[in-house]
Image 1: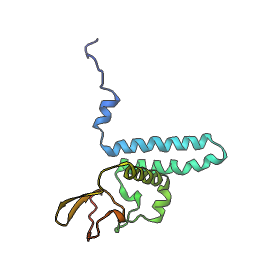
Image 2: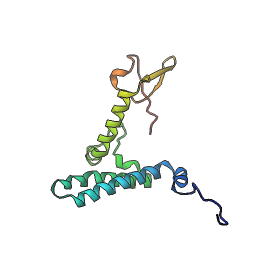
Image 3: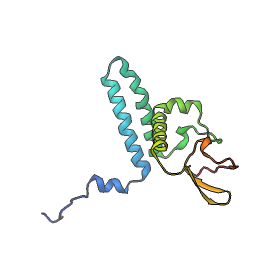
Image 4: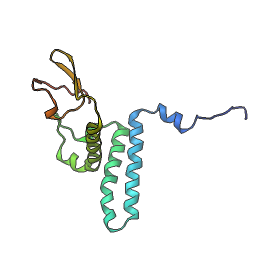
Length: 141
């Protein structure tokens, strides 16, 4: 042991914990995008389709790193533009599949009554909501 003592856990795992979530997502999407592009380069023929998820994840990496939400193409009414859905389809398919699996396996209630006329809950299917709902406030953005 030298003058500096045991550095032990002062490596990547400690530095990773202090990084903002957007940087972590950016790094993850950079790895995924690079991996898909690398596979596209190494694959012949059908491998050309791997450029699409590669480009998608690289765009997401840049968007998260620069904290620019316009890449998601959300309109004021909450819907996504057609170009954004086409560009982000590989990501959206994975995201939607993950959400569907979570809803399927999760045994918690979709919503919970907080006070008269106020419910708090996760994103829900239309059929999961009580009939008396007049307004939904999305607090995820």
